Image (cartoon, rainbow, N blue to C red; front, side, top):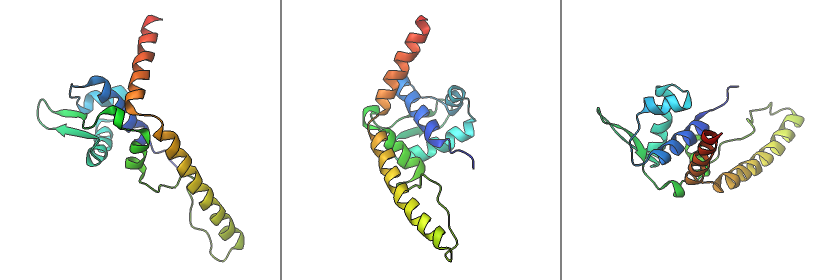
Length: 146
């Protein structure tokens, strides 16, 4: 199963926009930063726009910008936008209803999955885009001095 990269890309784009404000960035510029395809970047940004986290402007001087203060955007906000509020973490699947082991294990894994969802949300709530942008900038400054 392929890994969903939309969360990491969304966080990257939001952090990049936070560090570039008030400038407007094109999806091509942002794709270059993430070594990604501009179409994929636009899809992820479109999802973030629908959620009210970014805004876009079309035309020759168009591009993307943040729609909210980066200090008010948590990583959990991005997770919920990309994965939905009840996204399974463990990749549960349907089991044979006639198999007592499958039914039992599935029920147990469903409970564990719900706890894992809550743990992920709690961890991601603790970090904002502004914090990441500050750390990324500090890291870039340190690398430039080395």
